[in-house]
Length: 96
Image (cartoon, rainbow, N blue to C red; front, side, top):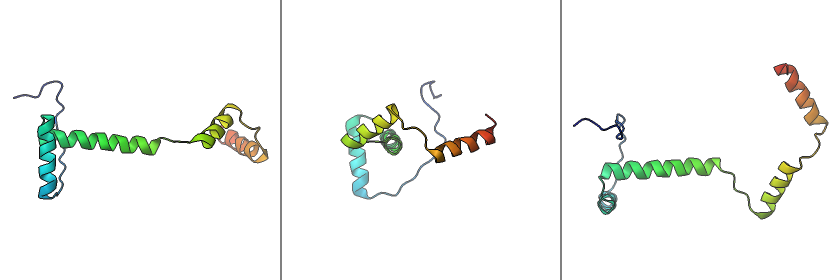
């Protein structure tokens, strides 16, 4: 049977050694979801990977830190001499 337009062609292989107990658990979860073990594993791993990446790329601030961050963004301080010197060096390098 030819793959449909909605089904991506899977060319890569991923292997893992697991215990019998883990395998039974995964098989049961896939069965409850009404999907194959492979589809269950791929779906869960993809979701976990996306969440891991999202969590590492997201800055979470609480109360005082969030307020200080927003205040600095909305009302940035005037650049000091070191910042002005850095901007001058940058402009010379990029010829802006």
